[in-house]
Image 1: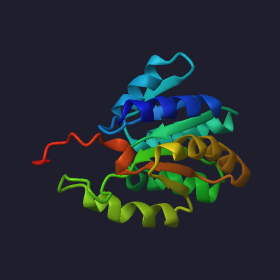
Image 2: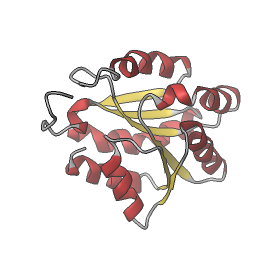
Image 3: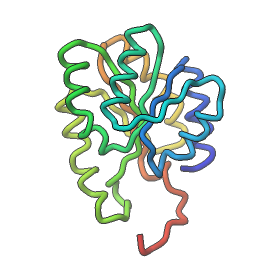
Image 4: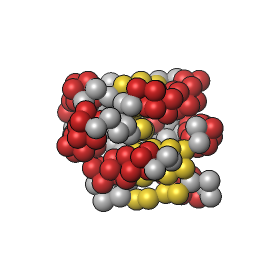
Length: 174
């Protein structure tokens, strides 16, 4: 992820008064994960699976703290049970940040199913989401997400398009 994107993510999360950041390591979000871990404004927890992180973020919300779950978009499928029970059954919302793996131009052979399934799964779980493709859209999307989360008691996701996740230096064999 580009350094300017990482800096904007961190600044926007601070402006949103997010205190807890849970993450499952992801290659495209690795720089943001490191920057958040290095910043004393955030409590950062590396989780063992997406469902665990979603549950921790929900618990923080119930305790009056703002939180965010950083994960690959395939994590939405992995956390379906937690997202459904918390959001659909109980109105306990979670804020998620994720890259759009499987986006047009993504290169690994395993990536397309992530793109094919992401939006239908988000819609089935009634997650409000925004796909951010331009640098100037990052801050407004992140700052607005917790407001939407609280107002609607709904899960919210900000998804970073490939334009913000890769620097154009990837190998052609990937």
